[in-house]
Length: 194
Image (cartoon, rainbow, N blue to C red; front, top):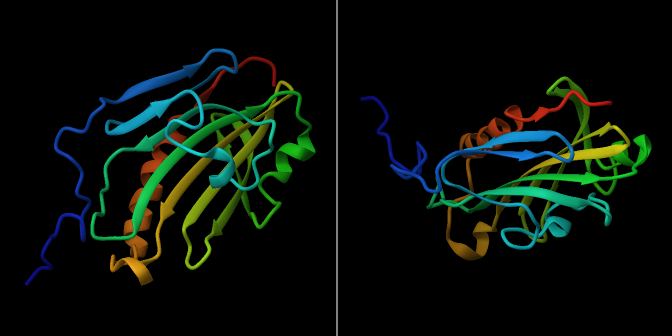
């Protein structure tokens, strides 16, 4: 017999008509835009959906959060999934070394550099938590016209030991990572001076 498909366990339990509708965000000042999928809330400032300084341990205090998207439904309800966020932030008047260091400092594991919208980005990953892995942050930084651009893909979970929920499987984590990567893949950066 073929394996049985179970929403929320073997396939995501996405809503039939997720709200709000998909839309595009554009930051005219820094010429950055990206697509926000349906079922994701969006704010232009930190603190309404998120806590950037806590979830991104290598972000600089001078960081200016320009946009944050948060999934507003749980695709894996029986698991320890607690949320996923996509952050876009900038540091004006940054240096190339301080920009790159955000992907290598404070426990951030450096990963191979990548290209986003034709621009070279440094890449690092940070997994942390008090009892279990409670936060996973993939950070991408690049200099453009004297400004450090940063994108963070954050997945939050809680510990199963005290909750009775099932730990997320690698496939379930990959599903959420793919959703976040889809937003990152939609990023367009204007062709102004680099």
